[in-house]
Image (cartoon, rainbow, N blue to C red):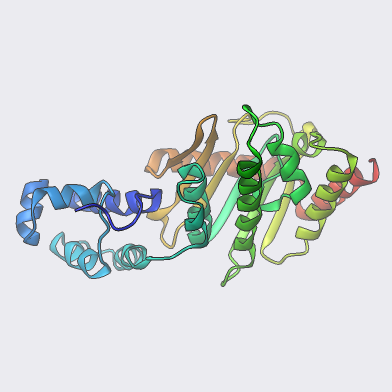
Length: 283
C-alpha cells in the first residue's frame, strides 16, 4: 500500500527516531515486528518514513521498547498527529522538496537560530529583494516558476507570526548587507524591512562585522531548529542542490558550537540595529 502522505524530512525523522528507540532496546527489526504484532515490511516502511504512523502506535511501540523518556515519547506522538493540510502542500510537485521541508522545519521549531553570509535570511527578505535574488538563477526561471518561488518565500514569513511566537535569532554577516541585489530602491527597501523586523519581540538580529574576523564554516548558511526536547533538534544547511538536513548528535553539537561562536563575535541587537541604519543612510 502506498503512503497516504508525502515522504517529508519530518516523517523520515519520526521513523528514524523509532528505529533508534528499537536499537537502543536491543531488538532486531524482526523481533520488534513480532512483539508489535506486525510484519517486517511494515516496520521497515515506517522506520524509513515511507509510511506514516499513528500517535497511539508510537506510544505502544515506546512502551514495548521500555522507553522511559516521557517528554520525548510525547513529542514523537505529537509529530505523528501532524496530519495537515499545511499551506506549503499546495506547492508540492511544483518546488524542490527541500524548500518544503525547510518550511515545515521552521513551522514546528520551538526556537530557530540561523546564520547567513551572503544573503539576507529568507524569513526577513523584502519582496523586491527576493525577486532580485531569483533573477540571478541559472538557468533563468520561467515566469510561472519565478512567481511561484517568490510567493513561496513570502509565505514562509508567516511563521514569524505563528501562535506561541517562538524566538528567532538571525546572525547576518556584514557581507549580506553590502551585497546589492537589484537597484538601490530594492536595497533600500530591504534594509528598511530589516529595521522594521527588529521591532518584533520574537526576532533578534545580530550583525557580524568584517572586523570580527574569521570563524568556522564561514562560507555556509545554516539554520538550527530547536525541538520540544533536545533530542529532536535539527540543522539545515544550504548546498548547491538544495538543503542538507542533519539530526545526529555530533553534527548538531558542532552546529550549536559554531553558532555560539558566531553570536559571541557579533554585535549586540542594539548595535546591530545602528549598523543596519548606517548602511541605509549611506545609500
